[in-house]
Length: 473
Ligand SMILES: *[C@@H]1O[C@H](CO)[C@@H](O)[C@H](O)[C@H]1NC(C)=O
Ligand SMILES: *[C@@H]1O[C@H](CO)[C@@H](O)[C@H](O)[C@H]1NC(C)=O
Ligand SMILES: *[C@@H]1O[C@H](CO)[C@@H](O)[C@H](O)[C@H]1NC(C)=O
Ligand SMILES: *[C@@H]1O[C@H](CO)[C@@H](O)[C@H](O)[C@H]1NC(C)=O
Ligand SMILES: *[C@@H]1O[C@H](CO)[C@@H](O)[C@H](O)[C@H]1NC(C)=O
Ligand SMILES: *[C@@H]1O[C@H](CO)[C@@H](O)[C@H](O)[C@H]1NC(C)=O
Image (cartoon, rainbow, N blue to C red; front, side, top):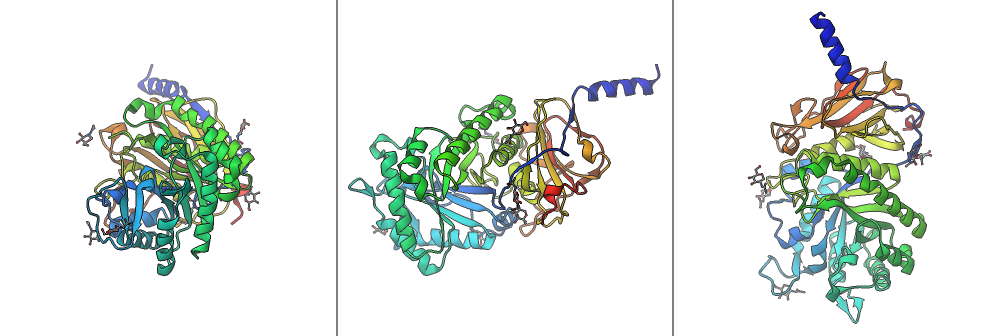
C-alpha cells in the first residue's frame, strides 16, 4: 500500500468518526434578542473594598468597556444590602457596623464611567434598611435627590439581593417584599429621575416558591423586568472537568425553560432576565472560571438563553472574583474576548438549530449583527459552535458549502491548555496593543467542511447566506 493511500485511509477514518451536519437552511427563526442582550455586573462588595485594583478612570478599562458597549452594568449583590449613601463622608473609614458607605465620589465615578463607556447603570438599593416591618426609603431618597441634581441617568433600579436567601434575622416575606417594591417604585418615580426600569426580585436560582409568591403577591405588576440568578456549581468544589460536563451544561436547559414559563405566565409582557449569572457561585473557581475553559459555560448559556427567550443575561462579573472578564491587572481574560466577538458578530433573530449526531458539539445560530463595526451585509448568518469533546469534529453546513465562511475560531492561548489565561483567535493570541484600542479581530476565509479541533469554540459567519429572516435592516 502506498503511503498516500494509507494517509488517505487514515484521514478518512479519523475524520469520519464524527461528521456533523447543521441544517441551517430550514432552521426556523424563533426569537428576537435586543442590542443589550449581553450585559455585565460589578459586585457591591467592590464599594466596600474601596474598588480593590479596579479603576473607573483608567483608560484601559474604558477602552475595554467601550468595546462591549452598549451594555447594562448592574451594581449589586449580597453587599448591596449593607450600602449606606453618605453625602458628607469623603473617604472610607473603618466601620462600626455591617454597613459601609457609598460616597459621593463613588457615585460620581460610577456614573461618569457608564456615560463615557456608553453603558446603562442598574443600581441595587439596600432593602435591609427597615422601619416597622417596612422598607425605609430615607437613605435612598438622599441618593436619588443627588442623582437628579447631578443629572445622572441610571436606567434601572433594584431593591435587595437574593431575598430567598436572607438570613432569618433579616427575612422579608414575599408579600412584604412585593409591598416594598411598590413603595420603592413610587419613591423613585417621585424623585424626578429620568424614566427607569424597576428590576427584581433577583432570586438565587431560577425557580422556586419565593419567586412565584412574590409575583403572585403583586410583584408582577410592579416590576418591568423579572430577574433571577444562576450558577452551575459551587466555586469552592468545582473541578476543571465540570467545565466541559454535558450534564451540567444541560442542567441549564430545564432551569431556563422553567423560569421563562413562570415569568411569562405570572408576569405577562414583562421582560425575563438572568440578572446575575456565572459559572460558579461564591466568587468563582480560582484559576478555572477566569481561564479559557470558562468560555464553554458562557457561550452555551448565551446560546440557550437567547433560544429559550430571555431578554438579557448579565455576566458576573466585569471585574472582581475568579469569574471576571478582566483581571486584577485590568487585562482581559479569555471570556472578555469571547464576549466582544459575540457582541460584534451575533444579532437577531435567533434560529432553532438542532444537531443530535454528536453530543460534544453544541451549536447555535442567529442572524449576523449587521450594525457592528465589521459591516456585514443583510442576509448574513452567524453560527456559534463549541467542541467539548477530545476529538476533532467535522462540521458541514450544507447550504453554505459553496459560500465563503468567515471563521473566528478560539483555542487555548498557551501550554496551560484549558486553564490558559489567554486565548488564540485563529491561532494568534489576543492582547491589547495599548490602552486606547482593541486589536483587529481577523477571520479566516474558508469554504466547505469545518474541522473543529478538540476543545475549540468559535463563530462562523456566512455573509452570502441571503437568509430571508436576516434581510431586514
Ligand atoms: C423579530 O422582529 C421582527 C421585526 O420587528 C419581526 O418581523 C419578527 O416577526 C420577529 N421575529 C420573531 C421570531 O419574533
Ligand atoms: C486610575 O487611572 C487613572 C488614569 O489612568 C490614573 O491617573 C490613576 O492614578 C489611577 N488610579 C489608581 C488608584 O490606580
Ligand atoms: C456619614 O459620614 C459621617 C462622617 O464619617 C458620619 O458622621 C455620619 O454619621 C455618616 N452618616 C451616615 C448616614 O452614615
Ligand atoms: C493560580 O495561578 C497562579 C499563577 O497563574 C498561582 O500563582 C496561584 O497559586 C494559583 N492559585 C490556585 C488556588 O491554584
Ligand atoms: C427547537 O426545535 C426542536 C426540534 O424541532 C423542538 O423540540 C424545540 O422545542 C425547539 N426549541 C425552541 C426553543 O423553539
Ligand atoms: C451589534 O453591534 C452594535 C454596534 O456595535 C451594538 O450596538 C449591538 O449591541 C450589537 N448587537 C448585539 C445583539 O449584541
